[in-house]
Image (cartoon, rainbow, N blue to C red; front, top):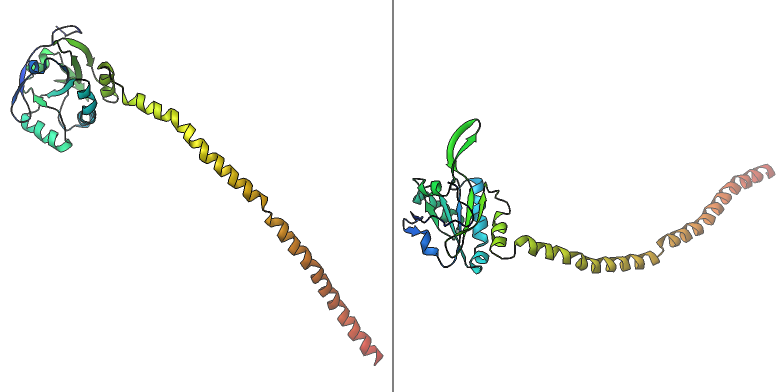
Length: 226
């Protein structure tokens, strides 16, 4: 029977990445973010794990603990954790018994082939051990933000939206300064100066041409007089 919100979360004991046995009941007194994922070091699972890693300080500030569970071995978990600097425990459920208890061991299909595997899912468990929220068939983008919101914290999106709202006011000041500079530049009239220079040169060229015309006539007159 599938678990629902309000049900008591099934207790379990599994080895972590170092082979130490960890029980869900040991986290009673605070909230637990228990998430199931298909496989270590695959694109979607890596992104999800790194999102949880980056949000750890905010999640812990809300008195919650993140735990990841998959069928991978403890040795695989250790490599995965060290490779990406993950800062929360990864538990190994090689027998998939815990996955079955939480209803995440399901039939999947890929490229026309059916097989059994772990459905990406997250359970938010309260301090009393009851399930407060369930996310099934998780879409990785923004999933951690959803969990933080469910824990009562501020999501990164809300913080970014506040920054974006202030940004236009900051951009107005430099725009006013650039306008003032363009006005000052427009007062200078380099074209007027160039026109004055060209006007002064024109009469000189005309005089030179007239002189050039007179010289041949004068020479002809002199020849005739002789």
